[in-house]
Image 1 (tube, rainbow, N blue to C red):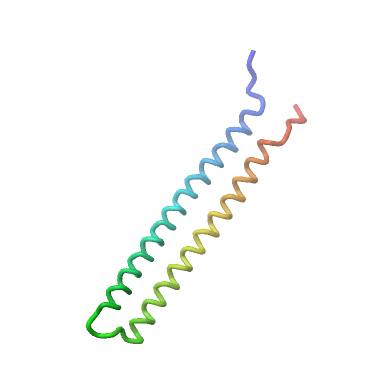
Image 2 (cartoon, rainbow, N blue to C red):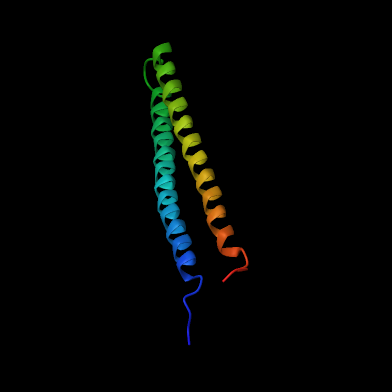
Length: 102
């Protein structure tokens, strides 16, 4: 004779974890896109350093602003991942609690 005692709670926790994992996957994709943007900026800086005319102050500022924007996006993505890991920890804590009531 089998019982489904506790299974609803476990299924709910598993669904919550799955949902958070999907969100984490999306955050990771955003972070990957940020890294690719840094590569693009790096290539543009190398090209500018090899140009016949030196880069202007405005050009340097433009690179600086783009780097800053990418750093902020990277930090936001990392903060989101940290929050998701906290949420996953909370969801799994409820599964790990011993069943004390009927």
